[in-house]
Length: 92
Image (cartoon, rainbow, N blue to C red; front, side, top):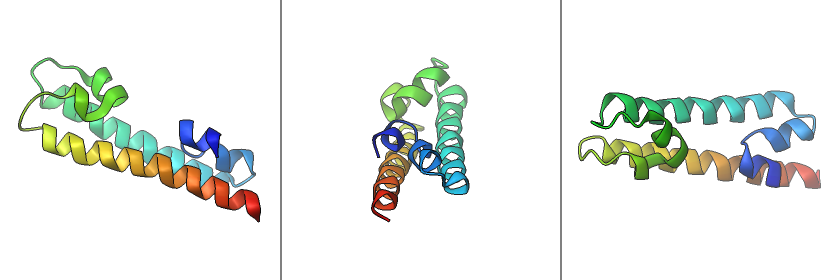
């Protein structure tokens, strides 16, 4: 569970659920790339790396901030969902 909380899909991969782990990891990477693109395209300071790492906090632009908040929320949901899924698979 802890592995999936840090890197989504890692707990599933460790349990032998390769397809599930790859899907969680791909979704998390895709959301991070979307968040980084908001940081790169929509902000004035071009802080794409900060957007990918820190989410909405790194995007101060008033136009892109609501979009970044939604994507950051989705990133957090994917992390939590992945950890919960890995924990549930430990019991079976």
